[in-house]
Length: 515
Image (cartoon, rainbow, N blue to C red; front, top):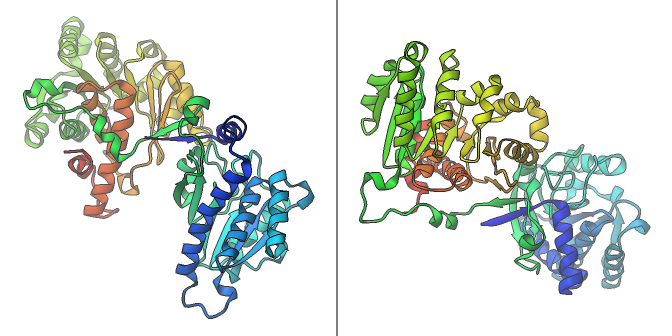
């Protein structure tokens, strides 16, 4: 597992390393510059090969006046020392630069590096451009001369040019991934110590290109001591999934109740049940309407199908209550919402389930929409629940616009988790999973192939299946989202990004799960 940090957290780690540990700032800077120089040199060899003109085989390094710019100046010196042609362009007022910036300028001049003014750059001359204009401290929109410089580079650089960003692409907010007015998209971002949250959230994730985390000497425990923003799961973390003992039976792996599927929406119930079984749940029982029975029995005979008539809720409330209570007592986990619809009886059905259940619950899809329009139901939301809204559903739940939510996904998910006490899975291209203690995961798996009807139903089933097997709520949610993305990637590899169906994601869980 890896951590991501905000710009402020990284600055605190940086100062702690310098002041408490005693590693000089220039030592950290030199190691950072070496990491960037390695990537720039590699790209220069790839992009500059076959070029006859010396100018076409050189690197342009564009530097601001902060420590990010100081890193860039050091990169130019290192590349020149290796025999590469590196042109360093300085933007901004040099006499306003940081102490480290001034030091790197003095070293570069003594080393014989030619420093030029930024307005001298001819972007189309360079196969590789190193972006060292702004670092992780950017908090306001890029304007004036810096804005014009970035826009000129974007407009005039070669179509095949590679851009290497130093720590973060200039113009991207390190905490939210927002574009601060304008930004320079990178081919590769070399970031230092840990992921910056803004590199993992869109649109920053798009601008970052391939992200490489360079170890430049920060203490490994710094995020634990000083604070971190998000956790990022990796393949090796899958060893923490529930294990399947040899001496076991179907009841050993959990019983999941799935309340899903109005008339004509049985497919949602099928997909959730399939995913729960594929992720390892031992027993799945589906509570649905009679219209869905033939399809479910045909397509997923492994599931037990329990039927109810909406009229039963209206006319036989006590008997209906006892039925729901018995089902909830049977289950180790409950999923409610996929394909449930918005008929008047759904409000009562949701209230019956949420008031009776004592095991972990995934509240998804139409159950969330019902929750949004029935404020009285919010009293049932508690720490045993996982809510899985996409941006539209989250907008209805919180009365915020999608634009407002996307401006700071981490804050939105954390605030809602803190307000409700439940785990919030805020689904998006970069999904955030937050708990009531504001602990958060950021998902990095997945593919655009997963943008298909039914994908969310599969995710709900995966999370429910993991809960049924005994995982804690936030861990089941985080690992479920990660597995969902890995399975989507595998399905895209097998079917192509355009042709993946939701059932393919469920069926490719076998590629994501450890043996």
